[in-house]
Image (cartoon, rainbow, N blue to C red; front, top):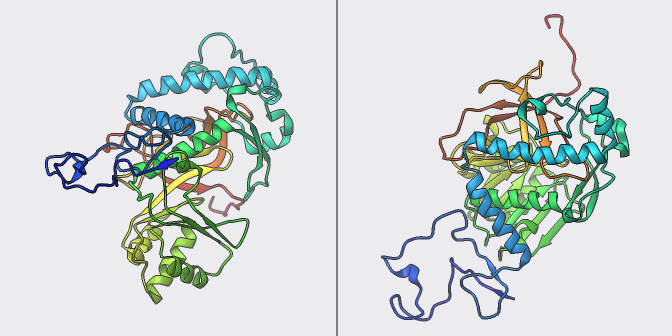
Length: 400
């Protein structure tokens, strides 16, 4: 395999303007633009370094990025039409092959097999809960999964609030997870050639990898990645970061806040750090401010769940989030089951568009988010102004 930086770093032994020279050195040569500009991609054809010839996995990922580039700027009504058509496929599959949905819908007198799934018919579907799926057990799994979806994978949710439960995913849903990860890299123009450091829950104390993971491996020659388990105390984490001196950092919001306070109090800084991401937790204004104060960088967040994958990514131009509508239909509903207006908080109810092994159809995640107004960045994907958190056990005061 010939691994080259096809756009970023062509080797050149001649001066600009001579045959074989680097065209970027010519003042009249336009800078590359677009989401894939500057990405250091693999070429699998020996001697054919430019344009790049990726392998089949790379071709599939490039094709998805090409589609994302168009769907993220699609008219909202057209995007919803595509979503409903895909949800219709999932609903028909679930009605035939998933006992939980078949019995539930029949008990409600719903006929979902004749004609297209309209918005009205979709909204007539009952919202389901984690408790319902836990009680259903294996009846929530598909008896049949189309062959093109690849292998079925068994996993378990973390169960931080209502206990774990078994889930099923497929190669196809995992591919979409990786595609949204790559979209996030491209939106925020990360330097994939740098070192990535991750401080999160890991199966061992430390890990070292030669690349950033499966989201980029099919296309890119990335820098190395290192990981540290979150159970290390903050001062040990900080010293590890100083030793590793990464270009990119990913961790949990609360942990990042603690690290930021440590670096403000003790120093030194992280001179190569250019990008900070958070996952698995709501982000507060205080945490964003602490990140800027300690590192001089913005915090970039994402919203995902283990069962559903990516639901929203932070906008490259703002601190709000864009729903990943190519993978999930996300509703924000009030206590009466009606969509909330921009500025109001609602329950996050999700329909997964591609999980045919364990369909999630109008699934109440237990999370709350605030609806946002359309974004001025040019992307028409729906906006979540913020992720408000999760409903947990509580008590009612005498004042309500």
